[in-house]
Image 1 (tube, helix red, strand yellow):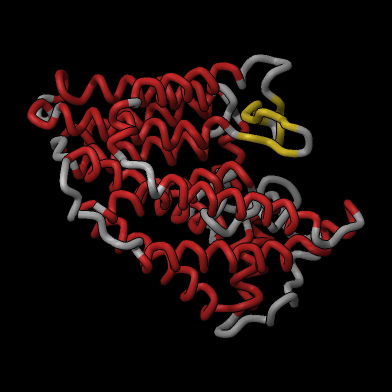
Image 2 (cartoon, rainbow, N blue to C red):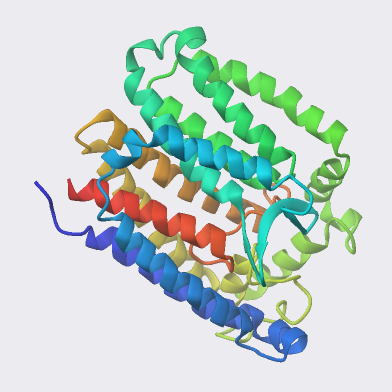
Length: 360
């Protein structure tokens, strides 16, 4: 029996998106006025993506989730094809040092964002069909691990470590709730340490990010610059903040504050109260996502719901850990709030899938 739309989940999503648009204007207006002569440059673009995102969210919320089960191979196949195509010079474009974009005029699309969604759908179907084999690591776990490493490897060729880590952690979280033995995760953790060392050897700039994270003041004008400016924004926020539009760090101190470090501007202008409100809305999404998963009527929709909410919350947590200096800078945006089209559209589509599962 179909139920009405999940109002709590829908409202939390819309409130975050609207607040994000307001903060994008606050964070970017000075920079946009200087660079483009239009203080509303980023707001206009984000508004377009928000309108498209809301349309897609409502459209997807009316698509029976079982359609993804039927078309899983097609979905993951298209995602893999896009990840390969973006690596080809002349097709993929380079931004911020990563060849991870398809340039369409002034807009850009990241296939790695679509890969997040495609791999979650693939994993949800695999876990649903192989529930009995998950206790056997070789027979039940290695196949999904192979697909995960394939997607992660293609993303690291761009390279886009932040998105790659979101995908890995999200899929591992899905495997954990599906009942994969704990010893597997302990062994994988040990391999992960060697893997990180290997990634650092291949690209030494990652070690610079780690050392700047441990002591950003060691290179305050270089690798530690973003973290220091972020902390300078968060520190003065206090309980109620400096007031809307009154951020100092957005005035050419914190680079492009409308993207990865928008939470720093929220903290500076709205203080601890603003942080609590944003955190509360994310917790509502987590609560409803878990409730939807626990009440799902079949294993596929259960794991699909878990995957959707995991990837949103893991990305949010990673972004917040970066801006407060708990982990190195990864280039991960804050869902719903940061400026950026691909991330917003995939997040809204994910909410649409959750809304459809909640209707059943």
